[in-house]
Length: 375
Ligand SMILES: Nc1ncnc2c1ncn2[C@@H]1O[C@H](COP(=O)(O)OP(=O)(O)OP(=O)(O)O)[C@@H](O)[C@H]1O
Image 1 (tube, rainbow, N blue to C red):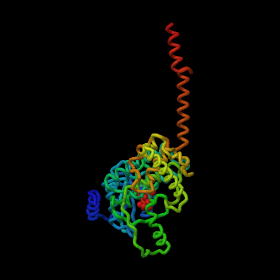
Image 2 (image 1 turned 90 degrees about the horizontal axis):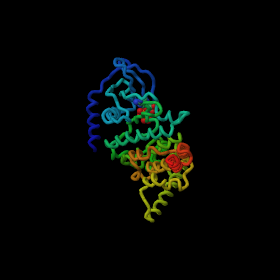
Image 3 (image 1 turned 90 degrees about the vertical axis):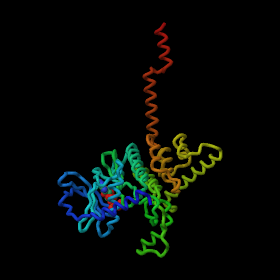
Image 4 (image 1 turned 120 degrees about the vertical axis):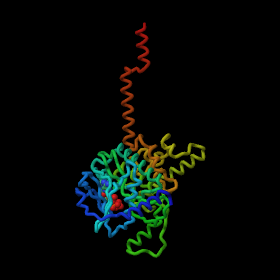
């Protein structure tokens, strides 16, 4: 167990000793519901004496253990000190029906709302979000924790136009290396390595009772978050999912894997001819093979740069997935093809403008005029 994981356990033990019962309305004015998840609801409230706005997260006691509650609270309070992680505010208490803690409130909704809004998220905003999340997730990883639940609903907006976002919901965070039961769920965010647990999970859901077969256990790896960041990047750029579920029988995912393997095959054959091999460098410097090999239809609007990034984050093999900090080296260039065209158009316009300023003949004409003047 890492030092940070041990520190978190100790904090849970200590805070369990001072959990106090309280009546929410005596200290807080509850304004409105900010959102609701599978574990509980989150309310915007104002501290009556200090006037400070905060998000109160309510966990029903009937379905939440004290340890689960305290782990999320202490993690958010003591470890989430990055500006793009949602920090707890040091207030926690219980009522007869709920455990409650206070967190920084994000007042502009969550990323899901932004993605499905009429405007969607612009390319610049998408890059800004991914840049902030790259920092936040890398920070969490540096402490030895893996988030395991990165999705649009868990990215909260603290300023308009996605200028400041915070990753929240630390209920599934576990220390790197922890063994957890593999649970498959129907979503592109579920990593492909969990497919082996799909038939068992399905049978359990149908029969409403646990199958006799052995559970499949997997270690918690940072590559889980890389995968989620890849899917999130795609959602931001297209407002859609790339496929329904990351399993071999899903047509969209199947197409992606074919494309992925074709590029890999091409790269390997080039490697045999002693060509440059680093896939990341290839993508950036030379345009790579991403566009050369027929791109799956759902990726057609993405630039070579974005395709290379997605190929790095969505590597079917977890051990080869890029770490979140690699996202930073893909910022600044176009992620959407439309923008690539616009970029060219802008460049042409700038060249034309420059030609006009130089009087049509360019530098040579200037030199000629200078000579005439001298004569
Ligand atoms: N600090 C916050 N500020 C503003 N809104 C928040 C905050 N925390 C949560 N929300 C809103 O409440 C919703 C549910 O919160 P959260 O994801 O933490 O709950 P959960 O029950 O753990 O959810 P899940 O089902 O994803 O596990 C979020 O999608 C978001 O819209």
